Image: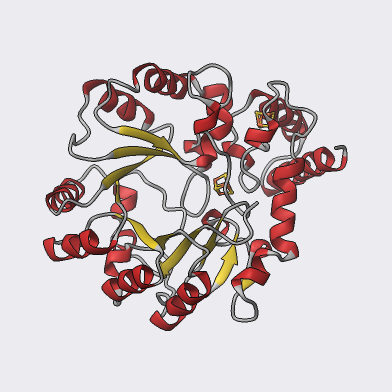
Length: 359
Ligand code: SF4
Ligand code: SF4
């Protein structure tokens, strides 16, 4: 664990034009931030300055985000400038909807890299072109779900992602916000994902882009079936070396818990340093330390730590799947409707707790 967050995901955006217009849904992406309905104010410049002051000399990178495109923030350029003045590299992800040559030039001046989410639209290609023309290190963020896995494999094989981008970063779809549970790639439906991972691990040298993954997929990468070197894999960074700050100044171990109040520490009453050391963050770390410990049949607990502490549905591991099967037996025998869902949640919590207590 780091003494202070080295990577801070700063949610400067409280609402999203792209999401509200329905374009995310049209592209088949269920926004984990609930962009269709969320209507919070953006983070104020004063709050952002306070974060930069506290982080100077300790945090290496601000990943700007939240609910919306950071390049739509009213103080976009000031935010990037302040980051650099505090010797913190700003990066961000955008739908690209509002990208212009002027904004791309600002990104070139201040950003380490910019990621464009893969929304399969004219504005996606236009933003990528604009950023690359301004010589910004540009990546594609591609959400992997049951609906998008075929396209990902095809585009890699046929090399039809734009060749000028630096890297394709694959992110696991999560059933959070508007993200549907049905779209999650499950362990027992992993063939296509395994094909994609095998293709990447066998062809890494030949591909014209670097390939990256979010840390949420670490359990899959560690399954001894691919040629990814263990040294290149790190598991969930939440509360270990990274955290999220919401537009209303809550420090949270991960942005995917942006609606889970049990994981939030209010920075209006606390410094980042105190929040980082709080019982809330310690509880999150405990999930990682203790989940699966002594039970990992592939002997990789230290690298995997049981995967995502927030969303068990996304943990791609046979061992975890075995536990889920035990739960689903209880689930199937239960009466229908909400009661079944509640029972499922309780059974899952019990199973996790049991794992933690028994180690
Ligand atoms: S058993 Fe747990 S620690 Fe081991 S690979 Fe699976 S999820 Fe990770
Ligand atoms: S908490 Fe879960 S969703 Fe967040 S980074 Fe960790 S693994 Fe990914």
